[in-house]
View 1 (spheres, helix red, strand yellow):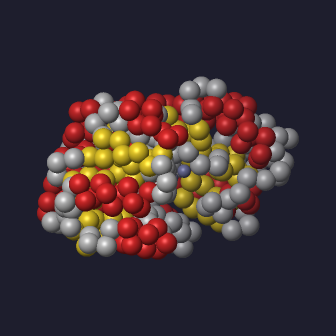
View 2 (cartoon, rainbow, N blue to C red):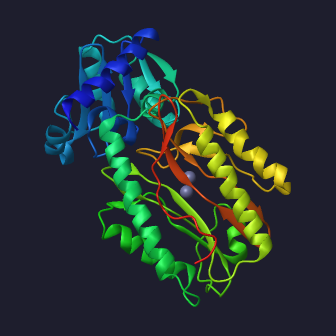
Length: 359
Ligand code: ZN
Ligand code: ZN
């Protein structure tokens, strides 16, 4: 990672640490370690104070730390991590130490407390995750590439899928396409849900054979330079019934309205309400059982949320999915999902996959 990104991210973290009167902050959460330092190894501990930034890890990663995290001092771990962590905190003269309530196991925390008995441990929640919400240029470039690869794969699948292939074959076709067109991984196991399987928002891909006229829900994404994409399209393979078209058009209308409404500073709950009203007014109350969208970045689901209960704000620089859906048990589901960059005065839709009710 380039050192100006690291410096900017550390400065933002340190401002929060100062406000919370933390002498040091410790993270062992792999994506948070990567975000702050650039280190992709995932195993170790990052320790930040007002003056220094240290990465403690073992011999497998010594070279990698030098290459990926040049702004961080390497603390070599030859046995267990806790004594090394304690010694780094001692060097920093850190008394009040913030750690991640949502990421550290009780067992690990007890080992840290035993190793550094003089520290006052302060629980924090989603501190780095909060920083990660607003993407910088380097992150946005990676996300745009992950989106582009998934879009290309979707276009390919819409050509490739024919009656007679199974959900699993289609999932494999999508995976091979993305992996051979620049993706380093899938951002999650692809969902290819045909017929009544589509009524389950997080359906499991099966050996079900796709039949003529089947409605499909395809939800997939990939990882590029550590960053995820997330994309859903729904369509019928062949003819679509009038009722399917009515559902499909309602979902599209809800998505377009929400996308047009989004602006920097919008409460996530308000974005959700725009789409929800359209779906409920069309007679589908109770058929849109999930939130409108979620942040995407190093993690496939991250802050913020746009849902009925969200208290998050869609700040400029946020990446959020807009993915309304209607699910009719026993028959079908329709969901369409774009990734959207929230800007100062509006939003930019990153996803370009075609939206068609039939293929
Ligand atoms: Zn998705
Ligand atoms: Zn999603």
